[in-house]
Length: 138
Image (cartoon, rainbow, N blue to C red):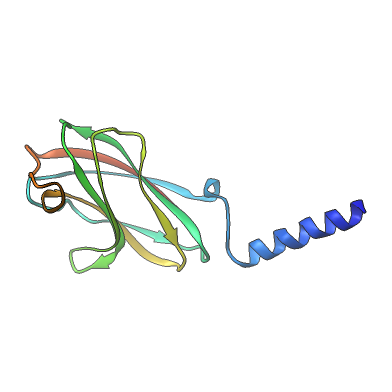
């Protein structure tokens, strides 16, 4: 009976590895900083994903100065001078929380970008905001 359980566990491990599913702890973490002005987008920060399969991406706002504002964050793939959005989120000034999570299933070039979410929240950023993001990706 014990050998059967060990064999089943090994098979499950091989199946999951074959599907490309891994733990978020296997991700790389990159830090990006910049600024975003009222009614604008910040620069697009590129990063490469080399692992394939269904893997989690986490984007965390770690700093926003002077703060006291909402900030838009998106991730996607490079498009011209910007970042073509796959997913967006609007976050408040509570730094250190996961701001955006999703899954990446294909290796390639991706990007993260911040923006003034005036179209979502109805009021523009009060002043230029300086930010730091951490992107955990496969």
